[in-house]
Length: 207
Image (cartoon, rainbow, N blue to C red; front, side, top):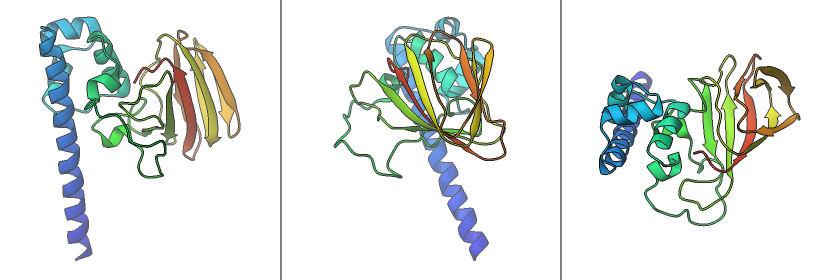
C-alpha cells in the first residue's frame, strides 16, 4: 500500500513537472513568433543551438537558468517578463512554502542539478532589485560563469561555497558576505559535504 501511494505521488509530480515544461515552451515559442523570429534567429542571438531551443519549446528538456536568461535576453525580455502572466503579486509577505522555486516551475536553478533558486521577490513585481535564496547541494556548481550589467551582493546563511569572480576563487563560509560588479564573470560551487544556503541580491533584475 505504501509503495503504491509513493508511486502515485511520483506519477503526479512527474505529470505536474511535464505540464510546467510544456507551459514554459509555449510561452517561449509565443514570444519568439510574435517577434517574427525563426528558431535559427533566436538561436543565433542567444548562443543556444536550434536543437536545444526546439526541445525547450516542445517541453522535452529543462533549461538551466543561464540558458533561459540568454534566450530571454535574445528576445529583449527578462525571465520575469517572459514567464509572467501579468498578474501583480498580492500582499507584501510570502510565507515559508509560498515562495516560487524555479526548479518546481519547469526551470533549472542557478546552474545545473543540485541548485534550487527560491524567489524572494515574485515574478510580476515592479522592483529595481532581484533577490533569491539559493539552496546549493554538495558538489553542485553554476552552469558556467555569468556576466551582465549591475551589482551583486550576497550572504552565506549556512554551509560553504567557492565563489569565482573573473578567475579569482574565494572560499566563503557561514556568516561571510560578498559584493562585486555583475560585469565581472562569476559563478559558484559547493565544495563541502552539507547543503549551502545563500541570500543573493542583484540590481537590475536579470530574472
